[in-house]
Length: 315
Image 1 (spheres, one colour):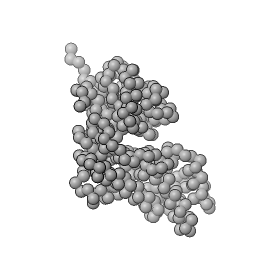
Image 2 (cartoon, rainbow, N blue to C red):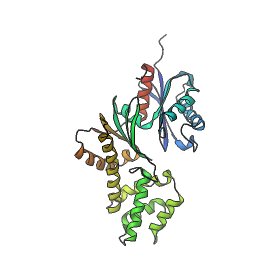
Image 3 (cartoon, rainbow, N blue to C red):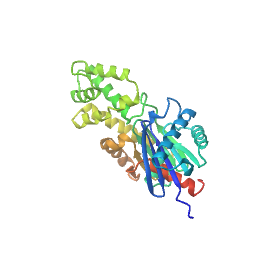
Image 4 (cartoon, one colour):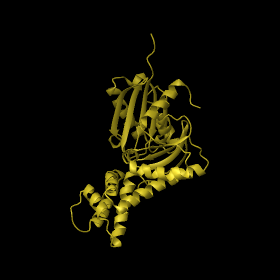
């Protein structure tokens, strides 16, 4: 009797959501999407508690696909927060203790190259809850630029865009040049009542809700304000796009020779204005660098790496 095609599981763990795909051959059996907060404690992604929560999320997906975990042939996890080989090995070992299938754990940026069809070195730009540019190939991360968190950096990310729009609004108020368009869009998005001193109320709201999820939820208001004619919102988007392009340039000047730049993440996917600014900056300085806005989900890269685990050892 012929053995069935390998059962593959790929996982993309982001700061906001976790996407688990169960696939056999070219057929996707289940795409299970869960809030990362629903299973991940406020601990390192490599902690035993995080591993237990992630495995439960994987089992939930297998249950939805009505296949037992014992049939699993390969598992690949790309996770936000896997920043060292030590972290990757710790999570690999924790997951491998729950299955006989081969397991591989990589930084989530490593998924973008395989998801785009690349088998060589790529620059992966992830712009969502966080923002980072990573040089990688199917074997792992070669180097990273950015990704310092929404309080200090992460330009282009949803929370950082909101942070810097509020900074701009406060500066404009100090200079007696209020930007009423941006002020109205963001204050309304946050739910502040009409009235005076809305800039100070916005600043107070940021201080009282200091999480990337809380701030980032209102990033669409930044783009809506720019589309409505806000000079400050437009400047914030442009400055953040240039900061992301600069991270790419730092990789290129360090000697990385990528096949392409692959852009993904919630902000990049849903806000073409930011991507257009990034492309405008890079095309002028680096016309030979192909720029791909990923039209597939990153978890497809995890499936491609899982298939490679089944087909033979990675080099």
